[in-house]
Image (cartoon, rainbow, N blue to C red):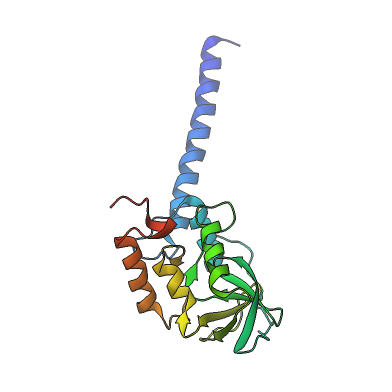
Length: 198
């Protein structure tokens, strides 16, 4: 093979790879632009992907509608904390706390949020308040969690351990939670905001 043909073959491969990278780049930003982010939230790629999955964006497989029903009563004892936004209650139901989002395992705020939620509610009787949606696509009960009249999700946001996250129509405490998040951001409170440069 002549040097000219080798150069043309290398150039063709380079162009092919370059075009592939550019198309992937534009497709990714189209995908990212569809994700609804809390105001002032600067997510990592993993957090964007998690939000996109939760919002059903960029998935080719349509999620089947859940026919499950939450069996948890209004008053339940928390028997286990899964992470900073999910608990298990005495009925055996998994409860996803509404209007917040916590880091998953292996992310910066996973352990601090989980430990704080354990300190707040583990082995205690809580009030589970339903807004509109009963369960999510994973069959978890969607509830606001209250302990002694205190909104636990709001407290975790104010402490900078989780972020505000809203899905219509379940937005009853949106204003209070956004104000709590702004407080945490302004004061660099908790693992979500302590290292953020303003």
